[in-house]
Image (cartoon, rainbow, N blue to C red):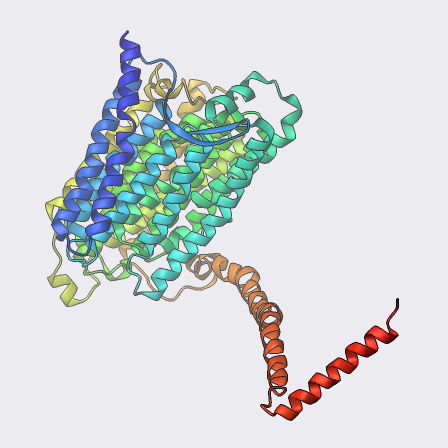
Length: 638
């Protein structure tokens, strides 16, 4: 009875989780012009807090021993055509409950932070409306019981990303960044949409339980190649949303939005949607090892490529943006080697320390009066003790220093990569080395040494208010303790995190390592990270900001990828569109339509001449008409 009662409770409460932020969006969205800013911030924050409280209850319900299997909450029939039936339904299980907790938990902290960070902005209420709409869309994405509901949320977060990145729309560069994010996401979304169509045509459903049940039963062995195409199409969708090569360039430009937006959308939630989708579809990917190899290679290459760029960036948010791309690459590496649980584990720890780092950068930018160039900072630790301490914890966590959350999840990824292929492990360690270097280069240039900004900036340096520092402290604590739920086998025989997810997501086809090998791999990873921290300190002790040359210039200009895309894709398409506009649209279609009108007008002008108003002319034409009719009837064929 207790299990049944728990399922009933979840069925009665699950719909409230997305409902609260939707209500917050409607209230703020309708009354944003007249509503006081503080009230708009309070409504937006309370809405997410309410969702977090319900999510917390559902999480513990799922975690309880009485919970058995997923609970599907059927709201109404969404699409019904012939044999195809797609309900509007939510699925509550271990995976969705975990993501609900991450989204609403980190989201609540970011909303609290935003009440102070955005307080002086005239569009603050509109900002909270967008933020609530984003959270609503993200909750739909992870709660959906089928791919169609996931896709609705998927498109919703894409729209909200556009609105929030271009929030300060009076700046043309910001609106261009928003359009870039929207367009590149649409490219990936097309792949996801094609994958959904393939699932419908070949399996007649989009519901997870039906689709995965058919796959696990193995009753359609003749669809192996179709499964490969479905998996590839889904992965294309994931590369767009989760910023993997080649669809990654939108995310660094997305830093144009307010800093809390970067923390929520581009660190903790939206960019992890691709990882969630692939982990959710583990039954499909486990049947397509060739696609998993593609996922692993793309992920590893992205982790390395983005890390090299981050080494030579000077915008504090751009460094964190490329760091996000690199960390997402680590998650895809884990997925590619079959370590689905490990990838989700890194999603959780990354949400803590990357949200912390983004909010910490926002605190720095706030103190610097909007300045984001770390070359003009330095010595801020003397004025911002809380921000410095929490930012240091975030840097240590992402660098994989023992004892912090990032150490456990990164070590698990590298260990699984080694079991799959030592070559992958070598390149993974190289990416981890660069991570430690560029993060502590950022830390030392920002908080250590002497101040390099203007006298006016120096005069206004101060610690951020409590509404901004308290979320930093909470996230710092989570960045320290969050990894202990997933202790490696050499430290514990029971992995709490993996055990919790095991009914829904589990690692696939991994090679178990001996404890000696694991300790050795762990030791190498820690040593190289510590060494790179020392190198970063040495390099930044006497910083040299001379103009870059050679490889350094190449990295500073991001390998000129944007310029390459512009040369081979954007400009040719723009030229083609210009030609089509001139010859196909204006001269062709418009010419045809306008030509019909001109022809009718020309003919009418000529016919008008017949209406002269002279009675004699009318009698003459009438007689001529009678003669013509007479001749037709006389000489016509009988």
